Length: 332
Image (cartoon, rainbow, N blue to C red):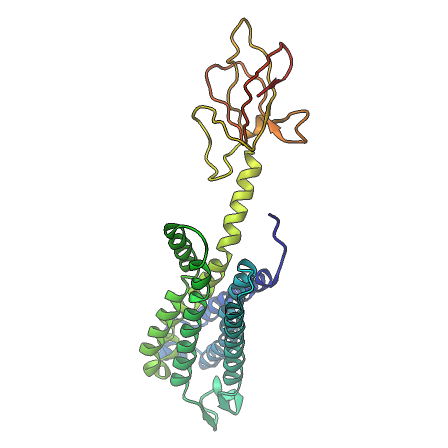
């Protein structure tokens, strides 16, 4: 079934340039001292410390967007997949969307005005006051983890209510949980913050380095996680185009005897072999597949001179009467 572009696709796409910008900014900061002790940079060029602190200030905005837009994409993806009249589920989707949007707005405002004057955020020698940055980072990270848990549990009631076997429902739940595995990185970032910020002010460029690993991975894994369903669909589509004779259910090639299934029909293009042997057909590769007249553009199998190989057809309906005429089509 053809899927049309929607808001989940928009937020997933816009997350990519944001993540690239964040990683690029980290690389630029690394070139001017990130990962080195502050005393070493101070002896070389004190202005590099201020420049690095300014990069951190800017990176905070970009990071907040890099983890927020994938969350919004996941929420809209749930709305697309679970199209139902369940009012409770719709209310939960709205609550999750408001929480994510509210978190981004609150984080952005508090980042801008964390110090008075604003320049004191990257130049601590200026006179003025700042909020408790350690408590602020911990609070925003903890709320982000809670929101991730909430989004992770949103589809559970809908999947559990599906009319299918217990094994299949558990399989779907596992697939959704793996697709949103970024919550592990959110917890790791929270733990890293709790260990980092008591000593952050003493040596910024050295102490913040391990924390930035979590920052970079969380945004990237978030983007990959929300893209998993589309990646799977893309792979299936490409495989289907390369070899239309693949089995529809699992993409596996059929190598056993020809099965008989109702609700299916196929025509095989072939010619009679020399002599009285009519087994001169074999499975063809994707490049050898050709259209069969009378099948509305469907792919068929062409004649070969091999022997004994089973025919590979996508849909087959076997009729009791089979007629073979030399130099014509074999209808099954």
